[in-house]
Length: 146
Ligand SMILES: [Zn+2]
Image (cartoon, rainbow, N blue to C red):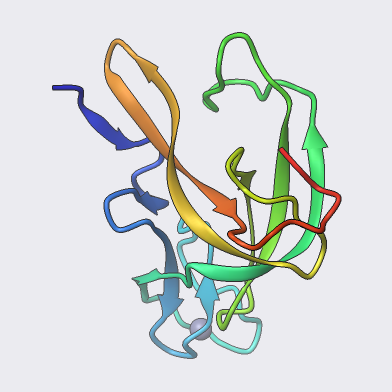
C-alpha cells in the first residue's frame, strides 16, 4: 500500500480537503498561512491564535502562469512543467489564497467560482505527496486553463 500524505501538513489537511489558517481569539481575524505568532490586525494586541479551517470555495481574483521551477523546499515534478497559479478570494473569509489550478479544471477567468481539491503533487520513494488545487466544475468559458 502506498503511503499518501499532505506535502504541507501544517497548512493543508489532505484527508478533509481543508486549508488550515489561524483565527485570533481576540478580534476573530483570520490568517493564512498559519505561520504567524501574533495577530496582524493593527487594532488588536491579541497573541492567542487557534487553528481554523478556511472556506473551500471562492472566486478567482487574479492568476499567472508559472514558467520557473521554485527552489527547495518547494517540491515540483521532474521534468518541471509550467502551471497556472490562481489567487482565490475565499467566501466568506475574505482572504486571498494562492494555489495551482487543477489540470482537471474547466477554463476559468477572473471572477469565476472555484472549489478546493486534494490532488497528487508527485509520487516518490516515500509515497504520494498531496496538495490543494483549485478547480471549476462549470463549463469553461474562461481564458485561463492549465
Ligand atoms: Zn486580533
